[in-house]
Image (cartoon, rainbow, N blue to C red; front, side, top):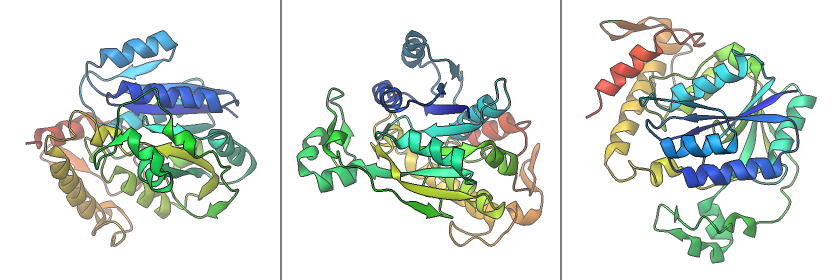
Length: 305
């Protein structure tokens, strides 16, 4: 089985370096790395990837997180060679030993199509190991000492266990078989620039299409906790709340209610939705192509204050 491990970055190179190092340290199965550089003019990350021999897709404009995920889908399943599995990994995630191997083993030996790792985040770390608090600053748990490895304070073996019919994770450390893409297609770029509700939407569509999902207790990762949002260039500029509210509103429009209280079994009640005078969204669960992706992104980018 061939596995592609895909990462999306929007700056924060030092976190990406930690993630790549951990993947390489803990993964013995054949795999390839793919990285989307989503931040325009991020020459620092591009230069480092070139130095490391990691092929990357660079965006010249802010296409957002969902479009970057779609690049990974194309990379895995619409270009040669075609991969069996795509593992999407956050760029502020440290896979614990055997985490990725456990995902691959489960994919090779079972019918599960969407296989999730279990999160152990920075807040959980400092709660369980108070001595780790010295490495994190403020309520956002900012991390700046990139020579430290406080997540290694937890050295216990993660207990074996499977949560059937459970989606525990979407984009932090999750394996997708090609069949997931064949059933529900691409991420919805209407949730631009990302970070809020795109994952909820993908879960909703997967549930409606009967995707077989499970969570593994024995595949675990340390999560710095959304560094792009909490420690990136927009962490304090006031735009986070506006993006959250806008994407929440669109989710409610698309599904007829908030997450967990949806009414529609098809997007927009199965009817065409006029996003703009020139763009109409269909009422289908599967997003099967990217033909109007650029127009959708332009529409939402123009709505930003």
